[in-house]
Image (cartoon, rainbow, N blue to C red; front, top):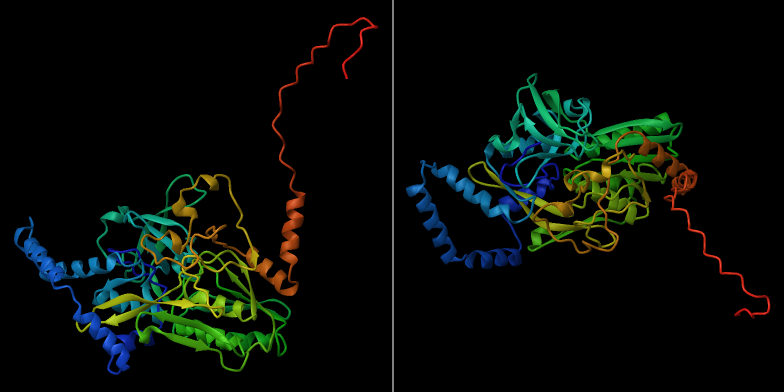
Length: 472
């Protein structure tokens, strides 16, 4: 995971790279788009530019230590993007190359997606990538990294503090919910070749596919795994659990391809931005790889961006039910704009909308069947940074159309095999999980009321003569 020091960043939530090339190169455009962009360019505020130049020159001339011109200009550009939204940022050439490496699924590091916290004092783990050193070391989504090799995060200058040569070790100091004190975890770096698709049979006829991220080869790998499962099932599956838990997203085109493989028709996703090149619509083509077999999508608070596109497409088209927890709520699209010096700008250019026409920005997808994580003593006393896990909590996030609605509550991260078993049960018999939850709730003993002090005996009236009448 690449972390930009100057801004909160969810690097795994990538756009479709083809859009980035279109927008960056821009050799041919519609006249309306060109006219619109020329109009924006013509309105560059010259007075503000002069003010910037004055400050720039003042820093060069009077700052206590000499400042390199290139470094100063890069800082200025980063500052230009800093207050836009958490997902717009500037990449120098090294950052841009590493960003592309992740999209292609190969880099040297520990295999974890991170989000830098606003105070620069910690890095929040969005999710460890399956079968990587981070996952094997037991790092969990929601963990906070407060130091690396004993050095506080705020004192680390590297843009990618967890990258390094394969075979080298790094010590992470973590804060985790349910643990009273920070603790250290030693992780050995590897060349991370992310396998984004894994599968197995849960029961005869019922398959399971885990999508950990969306990268260039995810669509083709998904087709191969579906074919393997169908062969093991004797030709056709009875049903499929599609696991998107803690999938932070990736290439939008990969998520669209997976959705198309499961849909015969209907819209998958649409995007809308300020300029026409940001507007797009993706529709399904005929052909369902599962031949109509039922699908349950398993999602949680770590399911973001492209994984929300897939879940929303399948649910809105009536192709699948969603089981788990409210998703992260990243409903924006970023375009990577390459610059002539090898650097790049990752800029939020559009919002995406599910087939029903809804934006899930800062609200996420609410599952059809809600699952809860196993709670531990002390969870209620945890800081919000460990429990409120959503786009809506990111400083400077884009305002969602339905943000802040009644009953909103951020989702939960749902690790382990328990949610898979619940998803399978729901796949085989819709409504079974709700019935199970109701039965478990009925078994719980009612809370014992607090003991009340013994009531004082009422004072008895004095004996009255028999002939005295009593009041009604």
